[in-house]
Image (cartoon, rainbow, N blue to C red; front, side, top):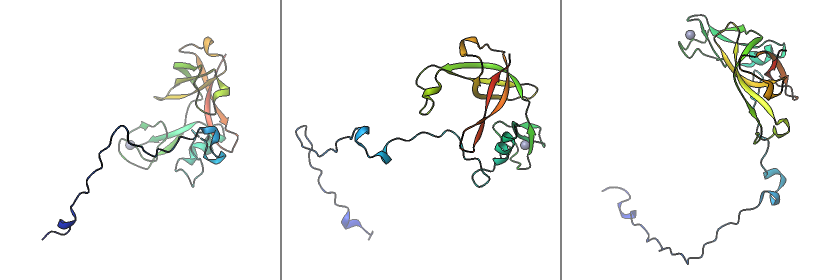
Length: 177
Ligand SMILES: [Zn+2]
């Protein structure tokens, strides 16, 4: 005899109708919510210390002004973003390589509105894809320097570390005149 056979009775479901009264919680407008429950700033940047990421060397080197990435010496595979294991051969015996400081704009766009939370004051700003000189890597990032109407595909840019103001760093590109 199978266990639970007698308990398979299903209670009848009450018929619903359009006139049925239901207790639906009222949505509380954001302005009435307690302060701690309001949406908070989205943080797009990872924590950078060795306790948080195995790629902390990337940020350490960036603080020194060096943009770098990993390369797998077994199959000469350059990675972007840097990796803890080669996606091709799965080796974790990777080497850190400094990247060229200069490149050329492959494509770009301007953010004129609808910026992510925390970036509203930066509008308008430019973002784009940059081909670094001499390596087979195309990087995405903010492009500072000239305003967006004066940018062109093929323009030269250089990498610069960007201080996030809380001990973290990231990189941006700046046009070279
Ligand atoms: Zn590999």
